[in-house]
Amino acid sequence: MAYEFDFQSVLAYAPMFLQGAWTTLILTFWATLAGFVLGTLCAVARTGGPRWLRLLVGGYVEVIRNTPLLIQAYFLIFGLASIGARMPIMLGVVIAMVVNIGSYTTEVMRAGIESIKRGQIEAAECLGLSRAQIFLHVVLRPAMERVYPSLVSLYVLLMLGSSVLSAVGVEELFGVSNRVQSVTYRNFEVFIVLGVIYLAMTLVLRGVFWALGQLIFPRRRRLGTAL
Amino acid sequence: MQPQFLLSLLDGVLGTIVLSVLTFICGGLAGFVVALARISPLRSVSFAAIAYIQVFQGIPLLVQMGLAYFGPILLGFESVPPLAAAALAMSVFASAYLGQIWYGCLISVAKPQWEAAECLGLTRWQRMTRVVLPQAMRIATPPTVGFLVIIVKNTSVSSLVVGYQELTYNAKVINNATFEPFLYFGLAGIFYFLICYPLSVQSRALERKFNVGTR
Image (cartoon, rainbow over all chains, first blue to last red; front, side, top):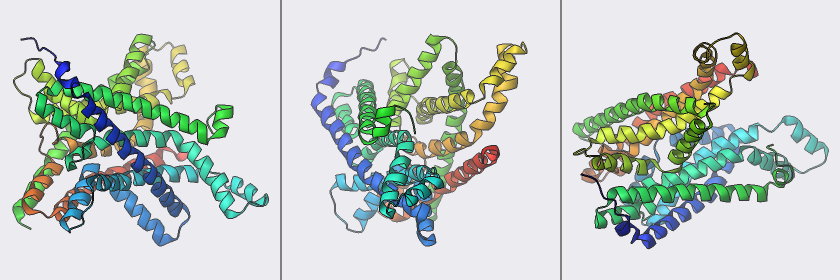
């Protein structure tokens, strides 16, 4: 028996798919923004902070990097709900994503900061730059530029990984598709449509990050070479 | 806490390990083929490998799970056992990443080594098995062990679409009955940590060991 594909009935739900894709992008945007800030702070703490802080951040990074996102989300969201903390599901999901991506960002940014040569910092000191200036212009920005490709991969993976958060009930792209499946019974077609949308989102996200990189790293824009 | 819940979690650990091992074996074999195709001198073959890697790295594992679960039914299978569907999807997923990682390791073997092997009149097969692979494998070991962690973590989603029973699924079922999320998801997290942390440590140690020359 030949299977007859029926994309018509699935594509009738295009507005729902778009709504879900939009939610996925919103989640990814906030998680990326907050996760980058958290990860950078942790990386700074881990490279230059006092011993107790370094141990604390190290523990956070190891625990999060060695457990799955889904378990973290269940732990946080169901856990907080069980002790009576009420919050919108979107907020809970973003918190789980930030906690998760923050640890990966910490490791990547730490590698970047550690790659800055001691001589660079000494040269900046000799030029009379203040500590804040040195940190921002000599350490942080070149470090970020160096690890930028790894950061982009992390955040694209985060966008793809957010699909598992449909399991805690957030209506992002994958969650929406569950509803379409239960209405149309066209599971395989739904998954093909999902795959195409996610692939397109991956490409768009990579393009956006590339443009952002051109914008915030003028050196790369002018010379076109890696640091 | 009742003992049967702990047993159920341990049963989940077993499910997680079985799926991880299957994924590593099948995904590793497929990934090796992908890596070899990626360095093929034939443009069409290497292009196919690039496309394969880009597509399967660009869609979430959950979607691949769905395709692996519902796809075979269209081909005439009655139904697909959850383990088979989960292992198929995870293997495809792993092969895309391992193919990319191993491709990087293959081309990082110094170019003169390839050329010298050619000059000595070795066949392509000899050059690959005697010269390039032994060196590439040394380079590939740390990232491969590191990727094992990602495989173990990603098995956690295999209950969502295909219904394979592993650690996360069992923890969820227990939580649905007991409403003690901190305890049971915490325990599940500890079990994952106990599997993954030694691998992470091992991966870093290997990396240090092999980088002696450039330290």
